[in-house]
Image (cartoon, rainbow, N blue to C red; front, side, top):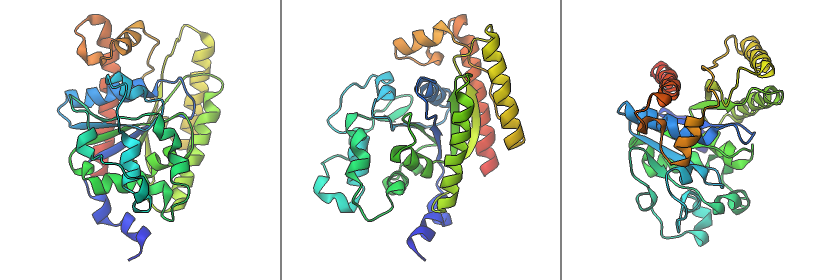
Length: 287
């Protein structure tokens, strides 16, 4: 059995954690906020959840209250590559895990140099995260692992997708979004053509920061819905997340929307509960 065959064997894919990436090549669409609150929604239903911050901007880490760390996810990934032994640091997974209602492996600016750091290795660079998750035992310690991806389609995102079972795609309903969603479909097709990992499924497209009082946004959202229905046979669109001040408030206070009892947060809690329902339905279908 060859190297790539082992990656696709049942022994390599039978772990219980579902890995889900929040992805859009555009910035400012709410990926980090979506990942953070969806993780807490899953945790509120009794699931054990880990978040991976794969964005060098480290905004997800900031939401968890983590501003600086000596070592972070970048160092764990480098440590997992034998060819980079000269760059290894004394850091273990359990040293870096930030534990709470939802656990976190934080990011930092060092992650922006990941692609250059691994450029010269002989192994499959796109599989570093996948192999790290398998070797570290994290897949056996959690029910769900949520990845906040950077707003690019570079090696970090390719690593995330090769390690991912499902994808959540937040977007703003504007004239540029449709092109980006089409491009994402091409990227997923490329992952499938590599043939070295499971092709991730899109769990849902999430209209975010929506103001349906604006006729143009309503029209753009309908165009996207029709395109997805035509291309996929169904749209997989969630209920739109409206541009609410309460979401900004929770983010500024580094809290999830489930940390509030006020009625003003009830619509957002319902939105994220719908996300968990979709994830649970998708997860159950995989069993």
